[in-house]
Image (tube, rainbow, N blue to C red; front, top):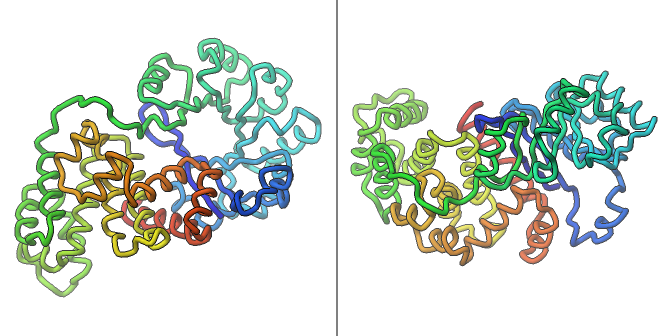
Length: 407
């Protein structure tokens, strides 16, 4: 099994829901799945297995999850497969579901069971023929490049006033800003929120400079605990967070200073905590999804280090994941951002030049994030990666993030 989450944003860059995309088999090990055999066992909705096993709290922080269904799986016993509240599940239909009596009847049944419904990949010419289905949908996903939103907004307000319009394939921040400015859409899906910074925009704030100083202290070879403690002491938020962690570890010990707290945590754990806590603070003025993105990337990279024969460098891969959006955090190009922090040659080559062993791991993770299952399957064959371990590693990263930053 493979599974990943794609976020849907509102016009404030707040994540309102996630689409869950899963794949049960490796396409390259099972070539028949690229043809009609991919519908074998279609009575089971793989994405619902993921949702039910993880729960919406862990999977999406309690937000709605969009689950794809096709012309076969829509007739599955969805209620038996889904163990989470129906109100949290949006069944995402596509144009393989036809505007015919049997499908219309099934859509009505699912709506009566409490599921929300969404439609995607529906051409404009099908809006009228699909009236019986669209009238029961809560969302419709539209390719913003292929539709005049001004006309579409008027049409949907008249014909389907309760349906929310979602723009998909929003690939750049400029596209997102323009769509928000023009109005019409309720949600936005695409890679726009994590696109690299191509041109530096502002000077780094003094507070972020302090965080960078702390990163450089702990990422130096054999760093000094007291130096790290002194820099932590400059930021009340970090001090409070450190003391909370140490107090949970040592219930009967009296913490007398920041240096004492740092010593109790130890060099290795302090370094890990600082890299994680500082990354969170660097993202404070960014969309919350950036924090989630880099945290899950970091833990996922650490978890699959052994799969790429890099087990001894798992901690370094963790930092690579954390810093994989450093340009966005600092509003600098990646080269300028990496010049400000102390990182290893492996990390720098991967993030800046897409070279080296670490780059292979990051490339795999990014394809996984995009649910590019064909490329992910190819890479798993080339590197002899175990699908079950990759999947469990991703789910473990989700759980880790849930515990680290509760919703």
